[in-house]
Image (cartoon, rainbow, N blue to C red; front, side, top):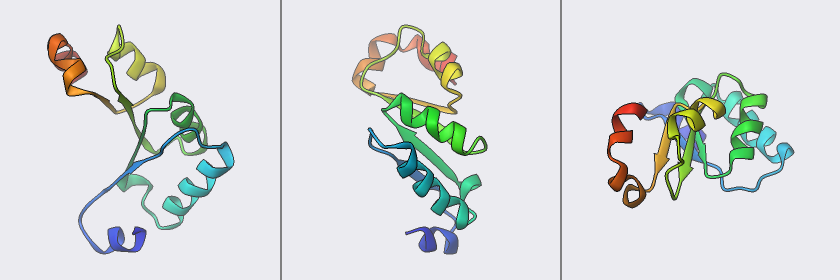
Length: 104
């Protein structure tokens, strides 16, 4: 798949299902880096530890947090984890639509 991404204009949206060990993340991110795709990849996960480990392994990798709910303060959560994307369930976000503007 990484070879296909290299040949085309699309970026890679990589969801890592937790829990993953740090060694597994190092292997996954290493393959992305070896293909020169760090700048064209957004790694996302529901697992906060996966995001923390990914940040430690590759500080230049864009990260996204997946949520089935909406945090009490999604902006603070996003900043604390250093993510560029906060992706809650639409059904959870709909009653708190005012959060959309803050997150944007």
